[in-house]
Length: 163
Image (tube, rainbow, N blue to C red; front, side):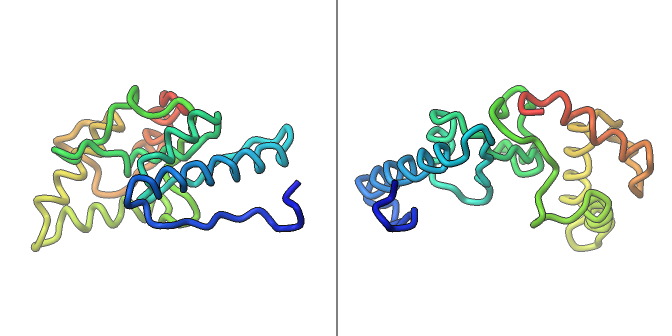
């Protein structure tokens, strides 16, 4: 299948645009080989962090799911969470991966940020954004991750297009 060479991807800068097009074409070729080799198994791409603009459209074109992590999917102008309806239907919805802290630690750090003297106002706004996404009253968020608050994390994900 590969003529003796193991499949590999040799990325180059994405500038100029011609290089981005070559990266996309090379990535498509490699992803098609992975799809062929996976048979009936599904593939989920870890399309997290800074990814070139052509990656997600290519994954969609090939029918490969990516990750949907709403805490990273934000409206640039006000940092609010993107509307659930705007997130990819072809994706694995989750709060994080092995690279991210557990939900309890995430919330604990968020509350500490909210109560910090240096940047508490921004922390408060972030707590309000999260509460709005979870469907919890934004004016009186809990100071700790209570069982009730923990349960509220599931319904928004179950209602995501990628859920």
